[in-house]
Image (cartoon, rainbow, N blue to C red; front, side, top):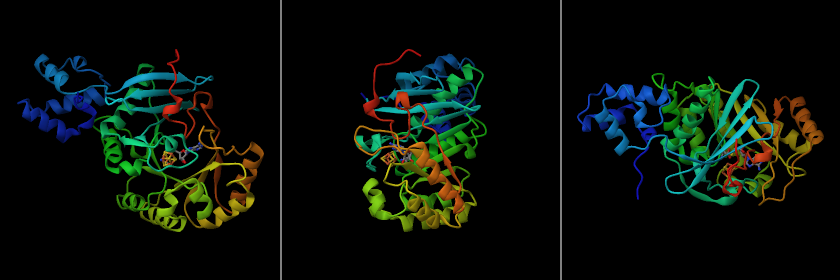
Length: 352
Ligand code: SAH
Ligand code: SF4
């Protein structure tokens, strides 16, 4: 059976059209919008300011909340919470909340699976199932916004670094961001979103032309095409030179700093020579490098760089003028690290 559409799929004009079709006054759209995005209502019953007849129409035509949390895991330090959501068609996606240093950063998915096939990534290893609807992207954010709201807290950042390639689902991803950005609704500032891409060159150029305030991160991971192609099939279509050209175009168009992501893999991409090659590739580009020791996945034999080598990599880059941060691996005990958000981690629900 086809599920009723998610209410989070609708923008204000869509909601207004629906109300018109039901012979309801257009001003109800704003009431519903505020209920959803400012009061975090999760079912039609909660809209007590609406007439009962309208609540019934909403309940019988639309899905609220939208996704069933299939399981929830907390890391041993309890700062990382991972939720698996079961979608109406049985697909499972994940979102992870990281609570550190007064920040509540949520990592969300843009697709069920991923078509890009990066060999070191658990999502890449499972393959592509389908794009998420914009409302399914919105619903992940609202799920956590609601939980935090109950504790008097808020989300501070949302990163598209869960399952999937956001630029392979460009329209729905950006529609979700626009919906959450609406000042009359959830009002989550564009600058608090980060899109991470594998490096789809035409999409990076399109994104640059849209001159949005949303942050951009690019998964580079290698400084030469031979190494990168071994890790990321996408490099065949969009080699490093074209990718860096598109990144330069982005910075020139937007004036915004770009982040390059780098999973440090022992002996593969973590030598001082590689750091120097990377520095010359990125020379003059407003950017910084976010390096993270590889998270282990079952389908890839690479090993994480140790702390000492990571530090040398960072220092070599910085001595050559490229800022670099080494990120700690967090939530690793619940497989909530980057690239681990995949079906293989589905396990019985833990009590939280
Ligand atoms: N598809 C997008 C966003 C999701 S992946 C992208 O590739 O950018 C988010 C980040 O996790 C990317 O930088 C990705 O390269 C990285 N990643 C994937 N698997 C990883 C692993 N096993 N260890 C460390 N980082 C990984
Ligand atoms: Fe897809 Fe990103 Fe994983 Fe590559 S790293 S397979 S693009 S999710």
